[in-house]
Length: 281
Image 1 (spheres, rainbow, N blue to C red):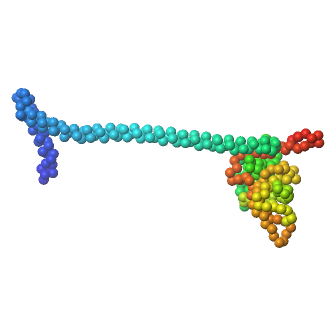
Image 2 (image 1 turned 180 degrees about the horizontal axis):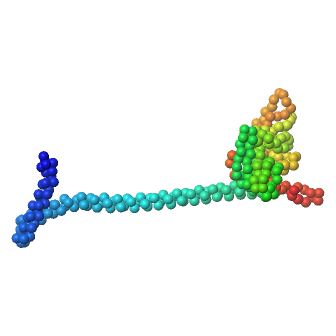
Image 3 (image 1 turned 90 degrees about the vertical axis):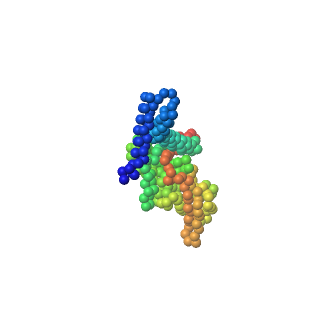
C-alpha cells in the first residue's frame, strides 16, 4: 500500500540517487565524453529541469503579485486624485453659479436705481398657512421692518421681524401677505394676497376691468412699503362669476421661492423732492 501511494515519489528519488551515483562515478573514473557520462548529464539535466519548473513558476507568480500590488497602489492614488479633482470642479461650479446669481442681483441697482443691501438666505419656514425665510442681515446693517425684499426676477416679500444680525422675510405666497398692485397693460389696481402655495390671488379688481391671462402684475406704490413698478408675477387665470363685484384673478409670481439663496433688500427709494432733484428716503 505504501509503495502504491508513493511510487511516483519513490521513483523520482531513486532516479535522482542513481543519477548522482553515476555522476560521481563518471567524474572519478571516466574521461572525455563517454557514454556513461552523457547518460548521467542527460539525466541530471532532466532532473534539474523538473525541479526548476515549480521554482520558475513560483518566481513568476511572485513577480506578478508584486506588479499587481504596485498597480493597486497606483490605482488607489489615481482614484484619490480623481476624487480631489471632482471636489475642486464642484467648488468651481458652485462659485460660478453663485457669481451668476450675484451678477443678476446687482443688475437690480441699474434697473430700479434704488438702494439695495445684499443678504444670504440662512433658513426657511413653511407652515400650513405661512411661508417665510431668514436672511443674515439685521438692524446692525441698517435694515428695518417693512423693507421690501427682491431677487433678480422681482419682489419676493418684505421684512416682518428683525434682530441685530438676522431678519425674517414674509414671502408673497404667505396668506398674511398683502401687496398693493396693478395690471401693467390696463393699470387696473387691486391687492395681491398669498395663497399659501406657490401662487397668489389678486383681489378687489372690478368685473368691468379688462384683465387677461398673461398680463404682468406690478407693485402700484400706493402703500409706503413697496415702491412703484416692482415685478410681482403674471396673471395665470381670470374667473368671472354671476355673483359678486370682483374678478377672481390668479397670479403666478416670477420668483422661484424654492431655490432662493441670495436676496436684495430695498433700503432706499429715489423720489422727486420739491426742487425736482432726486433724493433717497
